[in-house]
Image (cartoon, rainbow, N blue to C red):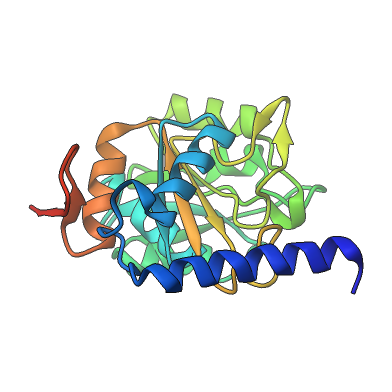
Length: 224
């Protein structure tokens, strides 16, 4: 193990001991000492988005984003033909129908084929940034805007990567990240959703923890 890996492991162990030592393992405990809240704040700042929501996996982040965007039964969600199963499974989890879109030479969603796959039932697009290759987001956003579609970036494999100066995951209406053992940032398991849309964020927040949200200046959760 190299020095950098050893230092990273040591920091991770120290952070784990700090959390366990406090005995505050829930999202709504710890107040301003909450490690989850600190992580969400730093992630939002890093990506330039007002809102970040930590969850237990990238799959959960995708599902929460779809729920937050109001996607549900009967809606069609356009996903690339080359992806991890979670992209399509997230659409199924909210009762929507995943529609496969061809990929181009970059192995990411082909904007031209995306345009051809749109139907009156299309509601959302989930471009995937496979293996740190960011999809052609400008073209995808143009197609989505022309057809009033929500764009949720599956950036689970691309945290820290940029597209024309913009962080992957911060370009669409929402972005999803994964922190499992195979990703750029690893925590064993974990994920996060980011967005600039306060309504999408509030709906996703309520969904991710049985309608519990933390009200401003409140010591605990608010049930809605």
